[in-house]
Image (cartoon, rainbow, N blue to C red; front, side, top):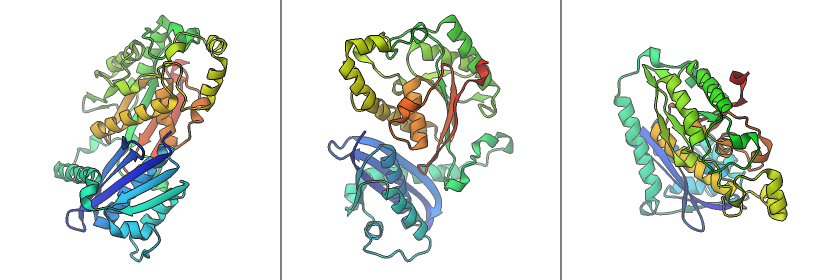
Length: 373
């Protein structure tokens, strides 16, 4: 968890009003490490609407990271002064955006706003321009035939205010392995599926093969898996059912359990009783020689952002492990790290989460194993 972050946000409009977009970047306040990026095309709007949209997206990303204190840096004097309470919000189009931003800001223990010159806000400005360029190119394309418009892409969460086309992620846990049978820590250990695990993968593949929207005009949805054998085998079964191919993303790999790899919970507790207890109560603590759950969350969030940047607005199949899938669901629910210990995910289960370009999200399904019965 990152306690103190910087949010740099910007927005622009080519015409004012005109084609508009925003960009936001969240950085670790101590190291300057980029923790999250957000960008989106917002249609025809003014500069101020785009700038507020960037602020909202940046604050939402900071909340998702679990930050408690935020320093916001923007080159919009209007937004900075209005959010600081020194200027009144007079324009009707600004009032709901200001209210939404203040509601998000109230989640933190402290938010400080600072005006900076445009030259110091180049990262967010660049993202905003990328969003405007992408929006302009999309508008040039001919309207897609009606037969390619899929009903499951229309989300039922309109009352939340979410806007734009979401990136829909179908999250599949791999099938059974010998280590999962024996309930051993199975992180980076590269073990294959058992025969029963292969049957589970086939059942999940059959389920996805029958789902609407995963094959459009003869093209299968992208299938992205962790690099380990158990996820690759599960993903390949799905690819065979859809007629697609498997891509690999290292960010979807399971937690590195270090010295506990291959041990049962009892064996690890007997070996490191005090450390194991601390590890179970503090997600910032790494397993001996391994990785913390906070580290996994940051890694998976980066992978999610990269996949959205590449496949934004599409339906994706992600084949991964317990902790990365829980991390993605946690992001969708905007929940704290305790979710990791309160959410159960079965082998070969299916969960679904949607991420919107404005920073909103919707969890549609969790731990569905109806295809295994």
